[in-house]
Length: 547
Image 1 (cartoon, helix red, strand yellow):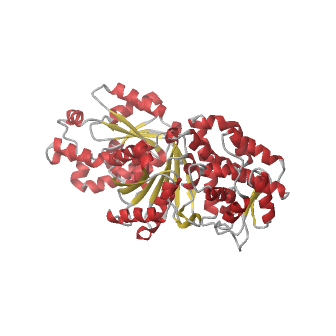
Image 2 (spheres, rainbow, N blue to C red):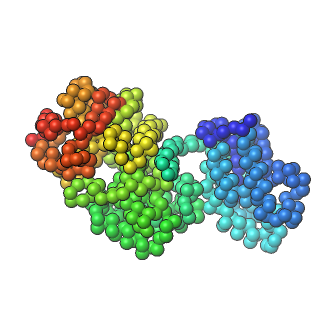
Image 3 (tube, rainbow, N blue to C red):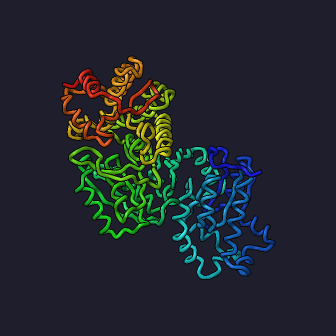
């Protein structure tokens, strides 16, 4: 019986050792299997057994291409029938289908070893066909240069040395015990799909994670000066390690970069770098960078692939997922843009430790929003776990991000371009009609962050819902108390109600000249409505601090 291991936890997956000849894959693999109580297989031995001749004879008689095809079939067969430890040949991991099979069914471990040690171990071995074609040292060095970027895509890297095999085996077991597989949420769209990968310390492994989805190994990173100082080098190093060439475009931080001028400059810089339609744009930053880079990717050469690496909590749970990209206009926020879906989103929760506390709190508003829209149980979970999340409990934070992203992925998959006349993707705008008006009135400046505006907007939307008789009155005070406990604003600070209403009438969610709101019938029961009297909106604004 074939075992589907794609979604198995690490403790139930096979272990595949990769690396150059002489790295000790067989010696380590046998010891590892014995200690874990698992069957051990050596792919080369299985190939020879199936063919009835040695690998050297297969090379001589049929050539390397024939051998590689058989190697691929053997590895697929071995990994299909239960948990094992498998030592692969040095070239096996070069094949993209084999790497995909290993990613799906196993944890891969690269036994990385210095060349001088490898030379000592393979010296005098005449059964290695690839070493018999010239100077072994030169061939091994060339193979290392060619293959290391692919080995670097392994889940775990263990650096070998001249230590005896039992020491390296112990190091592998320690690495396996410490390994935490990233969480994955699949966003299923009508014509495509992509993964949101969530976990800690992912930026250092970004190259390994994104290389499998790149159309070609070339990227241009778009980031801002603040994020570049903190995280750009780590991303560049990870791309270099996996053989992905890269350039960088650095823009000023802040909402001012979401302008026509800044967007045109990014597009111009992309064209100067002679990008082609297979060059991937990587947005490394918060929502501003993601929106700007995504819109530049959407427009340049009529569409370039792009990847989101969001560096704020707000961007990880909201703007990086769903394909909305765009820039601001003097007439309002995000009025110029395009739907352009990423090919992957990489959400490294450990990056969030570099954020100021205010930025983390701001992102929390979008997490709460997911529960308020359609998941009352998640909202209650948020109420009990908000201290842990804000105190950077890695497990609680990763779970919150995953649950919020999973909810958004379901909504986006059902209504990719927000075309449903009611409900659908428009539900994600809960609180946003108010929030965008607040941001516009305060000039999109640092005095009011987007998540802070959303927090106040959630309270206002609930208050309006209660005033119209849709939800219990106590929902407003409950939600306001929860958001205040997270350090988020819940009141309007003396802004003119007339100005806020005017901004709402410029909002892109206006339908048929009427204000369009997301309201609630209770926590987890949001719905869309255009049957909202302007006077009720004005009364809600005045009741919550507007002038």
